[in-house]
Amino acid sequence: MIDLNTKISDCDLSARIKNLLIYNHNIKTIKNLTKYKASDLIKMRSMGQKSLNELIKFLIDNGIKLDY
Image (tube, rainbow, N blue to C red; front, side, top):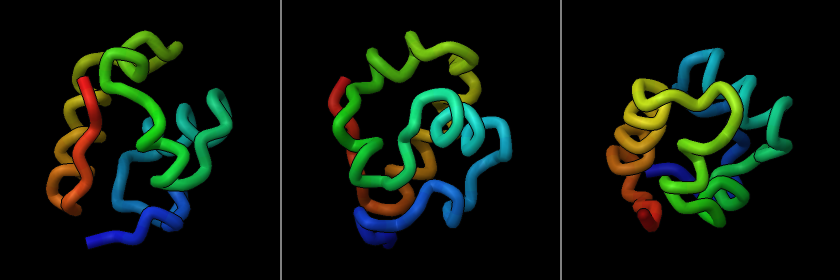
């Protein structure tokens, strides 16, 4: 399990997802990320279904659930 204050850069995610969250959308922590619904994330520039699936799987594996 990860802490909500964990930095996105420290997470076991692909570089593509880290870059689009941190640099394109200024989402720097898991806590910031949980403010978004999955339906909002898929609308983000460069966030495709495959990236969203990877992100959701990572969160679920770490006990965190996003709203849809």
